Structures are given as structure tokens and as C-alpha cells.
Image 1 (tube, rainbow, N blue to C red):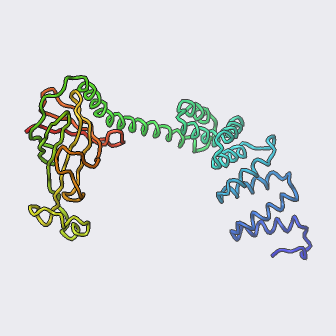
Image 2: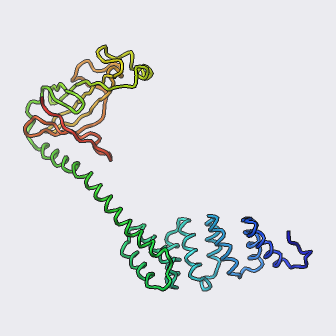
Length: 321
């Protein structure tokens, strides 16, 4: 440790301790010596900048912003304005950050111009970001981040184009479904739909009564073993016809007819998994997943939309057998 016994004043001791702390990578001692030096010499902008930069390196952004801002505006170099903007942005102050970047930009600081371009890009101001970077490119020996920012703009534009294409492709069939649903809603009441229908999972027997429909079918799903079935509590209710390595499910559609559309709910569950199931196919049952359905003009196809109103609606058809 360096002491006053060596005949040095406090400032000299602090300077020596600071250099020793840097050599030993002792961050806290380095910070402390500079804080004390600034208490003695509050107008020492070089020490304050060095201290603020160190705080920034250590991700202590409140302290970094504090010390950068303590340098008088008239004494702030372009890099000081830029670094202040970075610290303010990290603290969630985009307005003040942009003000600092603008000050640095006016003094020709191209790193700040690239940072400003990134901020503009974040909010979708691509023309303004390009204009800022074009001005930076015209400055000799501009910062390498200027080219990186230009590349980031191109990447962002391409990424948004891809997102838009995917979003519209996803929206298109749903848009068409609702058009057809609206068309069917204004049609006269449907023809008799009773009979046998084919769903993606199984055949259904559909019944119509008093403006309501009900369809029921069953199907089997392979399991990883009867032990899993018993563990889930389904084994005791398993139908005798289902193999030991499969589970039987029931699929029920219940809905109300209006014009040539049907709205209702779907129940898809293991057979016997719910006690007290309806004894009559058209009796009221516990609610399931809602569906929309429109009836083709031929009366031989029912177009279904499950999970409507979510980010992943499912479209499929039932066809008359």
C-alpha cells in the first residue's frame, strides 16, 4: 500500500493507488480512488469521464450516467455525449438518450450516429435511420458500427417482409372461412343433415332434432402400455373391445343450426373418463371446445373451424358417407 510516509500528498497517493488497482484488476479500488479524486478536484473532466466509462464497463449504468451528466455540456466531447446516450438508453430513457446522440451527431461523432440509427430502427423509422447513416458514411474515418447498422437495417427489413408473408399466408384461409361462413349464414335453413359422416378422426352418426345437431363417433389411440392407462385412471373404464395397448376415445359434436351454419362445442375425450355422461345423444352435456361450421350448398360437406379466436385456429371438413 502506498502511504503518506513516502512524502507524497493525498492526490499523488490516490493516483498511485489507482494505477496499482488497474494493474491488479481491482475494480472497487479503482472506482474508489477516482471518486475521491473527483471529490478533491470536481472539475477534472478527464477523471470523471474515465470513472463513468469504468462504471459503464461494469454495467453500473446509473453511476455511469450520473458522472457523464456531471461533465458540463460545454465541456462534453462527442464521445461523452454518445456514452451518456448509451447509459440513458440502458436506464430506459429513450428521449434523453436520443437528445444525447443528437448532440454527438452535431459534433460529427459517427458512433453516436450509428446508435441513433439503431434507435430509429427499433421504432420502424427506416428512412430516417438510413439518412443518418448516409451522413455518417460521408464522414472520413467513420466508426465501423456505421456499416453494421446499415446491415442491420437491411436484415430488419427482410425479417419483417418474411413475418408479413407468413402472417398473411396464415390469415388467408381464415379470412376465406369467415367469408363463406357469412355467406352460409344468410342462406335458408339447411337440408336434412342426419346420417353418417366422416371426420378426420373417425366416422360419426349425426342426428337432428328441433334445430340442434348431435354427432357421435369413437376412435382408438395407441398408448405406450396399459400401465399408463391405469395410472391415469382410465383402465377400469376401458371398453372390452379396445386392445390393451390402445385407448378408446369418444368424439361428440353438439350445436345449433341457424341458416346454413352451426355453432356449438366439441367433446373429445377417453371413453368413460367423465362420470354421468348424457344418456341421450341430444341431451345436454358438459361444455367442450367451441366450433363454427358452415354447410356446403350440396349439403354433403360441413366445414369446421375449431379454436377460432386464438392464434392457431384449425380448419377441416366433415363429409357425408
